[in-house]
Length: 168
Image (tube, rainbow, N blue to C red; front, side):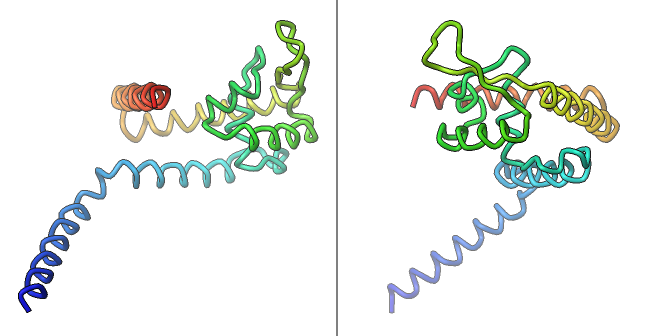
């Protein structure tokens, strides 16, 4: 009986602690980042040119990390935090769509580098133009200065996690 009383008291204590946390949902990074990511995914589907309808959401972290001078699959994997096996499959699909091309590295003939094709460059240019439009909207919503502070803070948080990931 004493045990049951102790457990009920503990349950009440945990409920109170959970209520306190629930009241801070607007400060919960996990919730905020997840919800923002979902909203950005919805926005992408609604705003990306219909001509690019073959582009899956899973392609974006790969194609957006290639860059004008090309990139190795390992580098894309590191930048996008996607396992190399998944990167390889996505690269094959992007090559089939004519978005990327692979060429042997001039430095190490055993490895390939990925480059954006003309079609891929056009896509990235168009998408980045759309993203800049979204940044303009965000600037109107929170103000230019606050948006810059937010972007700077997010980059610092990302750098923190990236540095700790390398060390673990």
